[in-house]
Amino acid sequence: MKRTPHLLAIQSHVVFGHAGNSAAVFPMQRVGVNVWPLNTVQFSNHTQYGQWAGEVLAPQQIPALVEGIAAIGELGNCDAILSGYLGSADQGRAILTGVARIKAINPKALYLCDPVMGHPEKGCIVPQEVSDFLLDEAAAMADFLCPNQLELDSFAGRKPQSLFDCLAMAKALLARGPKAVLVKHLDYPGKLPDGFEMLLVTAEGSWHLRRPLLAFPRQPVGVGDLTSGLFLARVLLGDSLLAAFEFTAAAVHEVLLETQACASYELELVRAQDRIAHPRVRFEATPIEL
Ligand SMILES: Nc1ncnc2c1ncn2[C@@H]1O[C@H](COP(=O)(O)OP(=O)(O)O)[C@@H](O)[C@H]1O
Ligand SMILES: Cc1ncc(COP(=O)(O)O)c(C=O)c1O
Ligand SMILES: [Mg+2]
Image 1 (cartoon, rainbow, N blue to C red):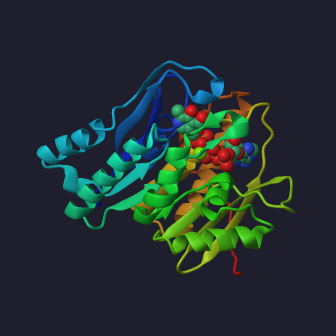
Image 2: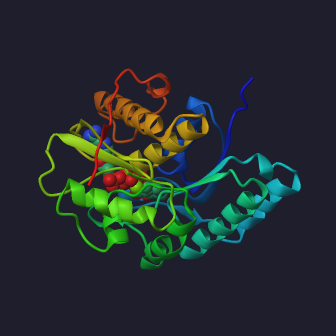
């Protein structure tokens, strides 16, 4: 029987609703991965409500928890690490120490970094030191990097002029170390207004994918966290990077369809669980070259 993969997921937790681990853990479990959630913050709700209660985890707790798993002899079973929303740059450095520790025991372990840098116009703001850390330190250690357009712009230090420019910017990131860059959300001059587009860039090739853009009165939060989590989960389950990319687009679209049908602001992950595991829609990515 095939072994169930294990994934250490280091990102935020919200008591109510879905962002960070609260958006990604259940879907990753639902597709068949054992998840070890390590919560960088515990907030009452995500920050786009404009108010929340809760605390940021002390950075020294991250290596302490990783060492606790090592002490019971289980750390070598970790097949992948995912990191997302960070409370501080020190937390980020503690995560990289944990990644190095796990890779020393299991050199095949993969690290996916979702470089969450905030979304000023959506009210999600990340300190400059966190952005600097992601650019200067985390990208070099990541096997997979999953920026959205704003994060890609920050890495490149400029805005794109076209789709091919987005591709060039994502390709430039490969030179910093990652095996693959998944751009979760593209925005460039000339983009068709009725589509939601993503890019997958690897050393073997690059692919572009378009799915319908759905109308929401308020944009749901946690879509990026759901996207990076499902992508990594499917890679661990044995999908090729391209297959994981196409699966992720379909499963996330299913969640958004369910959320839209319920007129819900929070993602309808529980109601959509069967659609996550077995998406009915399928989107084909098309090869793209410079
Ligand atoms: N098919 C879709 N239709 C409408 N909105 C979508 C669709 N897919 C994703 N979104 C929204 O697009 C936005 C993507 O935001 P972005 O900042 O690029 O990623 P992230 O979720 O990581 O913050 C989110 O607000 C998400 O709710
Ligand atoms: C606590 C927390 N985690 C994570 C996120 C990231 O969510 P998204 O996937 O929409 O980027 C947010 C966004 O507001 C947040 O408040
Ligand atoms: Mg995000």
